[in-house]
Amino acid sequence: MSAKLATKNEKKSLTKTQEETTSKTKYMAITGFMAALITIMTAYVCHIPVGMNGGYVHFGDSLIYLAAVLLPTPYALAAAAIGGGLADLLTAPMWAPATIIIKMLITIPFTNKLKKIITPRNVIAAVLAYFISGISYFLAEYVLFGTWSVFLVSMSESLIQSGGSAIFFIVFGLALDKAHVKTRFFS
Image (cartoon, rainbow, N blue to C red; front, side, top):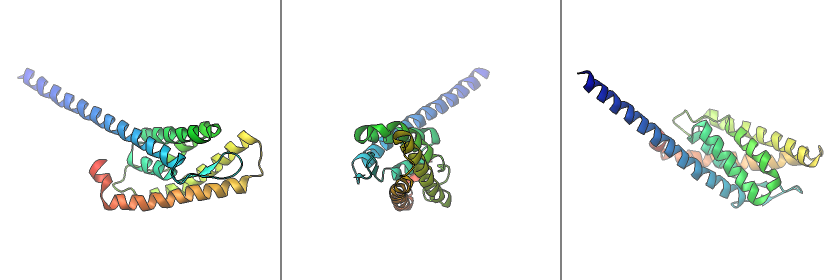
């Protein structure tokens, strides 16, 4: 009798282990896909050079926000760092170290624990991400170029980039919510 019970328990734990492996594999694949999309959207799609220091405006942050809402935090951090870092290595390499850190930081205010993508918390998170990004890039610019005089320029560039990304994230997120993407594929 106890041998049968042990066999059933082994099957249950094997099934649980297989489920965990499948889940991790799924999240790693989605993380890689999101990192690639973030890289492309940041480096090439709507990539608008601004300023004198190699900066540019893009809407790749909207995909970082989306990754932060769809993936568990460690995977979202990886997608943001890899995608943003690769985009800068391809376009403005001097910014890559700062970008890797900043892009991970902007994922933190978002939550993936809710059933929808667009929630009041995630809309507020997009606003917080604007401030995190703007202030962090301003500090990075100071470290790289040693000037405080570009604060207004730096913040206005961040407003365009992060603000545009927030709008794109909300519009795209509402469309994905209407299609029940999160409940179908991420629950």
